[in-house]
Length: 302
Image 1 (cartoon, rainbow, N blue to C red):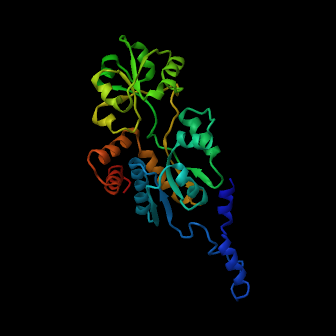
Image 2: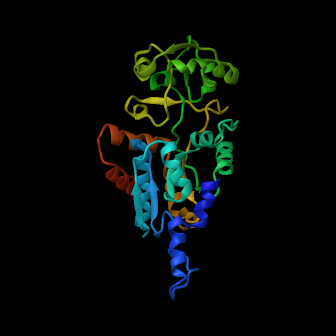
Image 3: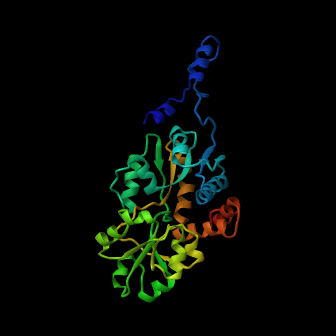
């Protein structure tokens, strides 16, 4: 992309003017040691979305790097992708916690990749010049089909495919637009051969699931209520849902310097662990700094 290649030139209009003036002095006009890069220092600049879960992951990255002696700058709570991605592409932000499936669709709206490995590979190919991926975590923030622990125990459910063995009628709850989504009732039937009725539950989806109004619910995999309300996320072996794992997007120029540290974080960041840190934020009202510090210590990374 043009903006990424502009970053590699590392020269702003102002810098060009200074170089012209320098030609009249005794200094070397070709010395590009202060060439006007957006990120001119040695610090790793870490950004985050305006989303509590994403900020916590960014803070974990920041503290892990600081523990390893790296200089870190934080630029958190920036907003959504349209707001921060230009700075990521330009090099103003050098590390950002992202989500594989959602980011892939940002760069390639028509992608057909669905599974964990396929999405990761397609995203690496779709990234603009100058950016790369480090290891993705097993932790996800994506759509799922979820049931209560009681319902899972009654019918021995661990996978969406297991719903075929449920003897009672199935009612799927979720936002009204789920009825027309490719992973909604029609997708469930086409992919798994499971027929359900549908209830547009909107903001009360989990409440309806707990009340028994619906017995399957469309819930995000990082939702704190998975832990607090004892819910079970059903595995999706046929990739009905677009996989969207937590993944570090990094400036290729600094990737080698931080890969070991950040990959060690990704190796420890599980789906259950992501839910737990979200519970600490929403229920326990702990700060991102404290959550990150405790998480790194508990996982042997401090």
